[in-house]
Length: 119
Image 1 (tube, rainbow, N blue to C red):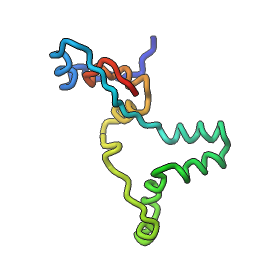
Image 2 (cartoon, rainbow, N blue to C red):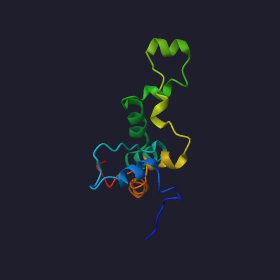
Image 3 (cartoon, helix red, strand yellow):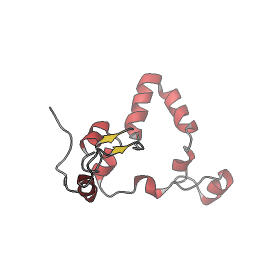
Image 4 (cartoon, helix red, strand yellow):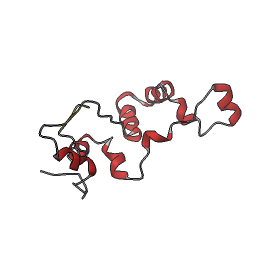
């Protein structure tokens, strides 16, 4: 069986706390995030470039990425808000990958002190 997890510490604070309980921990609010470049490439392959571009343009929150390209006047006129920095607040590439790759998330559940997760 092939694994994609990198060498990671298994004794995180969460895992240490988990060991104190005598019952399984079930996380019913696991958040994941699609990896936009891969998702958009797939969408374009399946539906064509026109639909993929339309999807990007009309996706809720799509204006967030526009903030970086707009002038202050455009931001004000279009009420474009700056994207939240905390949605991907990590310096650890493996943590960022974990929310995008289901198999890696599964492999790291114990590290997070979780036995089962509902995604």
